[in-house]
Image (tube, rainbow, N blue to C red; front, side, top):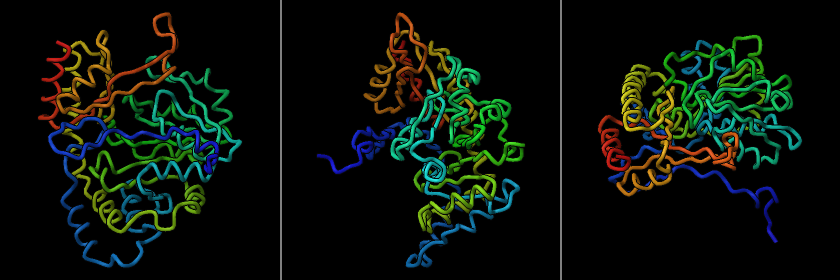
Length: 363
């Protein structure tokens, strides 16, 4: 007899990307920023560590909220910091979804949405994307219409494509919340600044952001949501009492105030992304144009799992991903399986090692 709730006992759980602890790996599998955090961040952590670690941190994270509000030209009461943007997603489900409600998300996409719905015991639905990663809003509308929460990662993962504001506004559930997950928002060619929140449907939209990617703070675990103050006030009720620790708060505020550092690293990543895309195409891969810090690619003949393993044998990690029913079934693919490789944009040196290995593997 299991003492767990039945839905937890049956849960597979989300599996993060591999994190080898020994040195010597070229790690291109979890979309971390290959460049270090701002020196201001290091200084802020040192100062915080020398301070009052014996007391609790600010439960409202007022310093960070002020800094983020200034960046996005909003009032601080629009901002809700969290222990990584994944906690923002958890807070949203806690706040809005009962067991009889429906949570929806595009598929293929970030599978954690589904896991969080299962943990909460709510219903969930996969909204299948077109083969070119676009939306068929008419086909999916019966489920969108029922959704209490619709999670839309934009840019999407694993594809890296970006949907424009007109598409996003067409997806807002009539009686629910659209969560615009902008984990990779800073890597879009023309980053936006919360325009969706100022539309007619803005009070039904929550934007989530992370400092793990563009700000090089994956090891800190810090994210935040941006929403109308009425929504933010309600979500604040269900967060953990002190959900962001003192060191993370100091690091996050310093990082977001050093835009020049972030943007400089971003520009290097975008240049390397273009090079990676072009070279993959020359090697016979079919990469998707990306608006993120990674590239999704398939190969027309060689099995993707085999390419992944050959790279791993050379101590190069990429992410092999597979999505059952990710495309319409065919005679050759009765399960509609979509699989491929998601490759993080590393430094130029790391990408050169990857490409050299791929030339050996695929010829």
